[in-house]
Length: 108
Length: 114
Image (cartoon, rainbow over all chains, first blue to last red; front, side):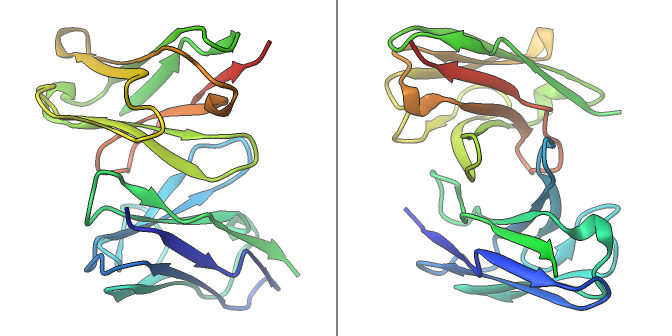
């Protein structure tokens, strides 16, 4: 099973600043990596797939990068609606599909 | 508009059973693989089970293998999860998810407690 590790657990950033979230896989997942955003009481929303492709309707301030075992989600100029929990997910070597434990992005 | 609507959650005693349903609409259900994903209260996401579009390929997480059964009825545009021998650690919101991850239901809460 591929273990996904996200860091940091909590990231405090001021509105308008850049937020950088990391995800590491225990072995290569090529570019088969997705990022999700989840707000309280809501289902997760797909932001990025294929490590760097934005899903339909996702603002350009969200960008993904990386391949192999190291991935980054960058949110430029954070808006109030971006403060949420973010999960990475690998779908390269499954079953099982595995998720990171999440990074909580909070307002500084 | 694509919709996935789960139902069937509730409170059940340890060792009991529940059957979750997911009603799909707004897309050709019989063309898509589906997943169940769960989230324990205040915790992260855990993949539970996968079923291919025809139902011919099925996978389970080790944590539920032998206790849960995924199935689908393409004529009824519905996905199911039969959960037996439930444990306290199965307490979670269960989401029905189209395989590519874009569409999720609102979730149904399963609570296993005496």
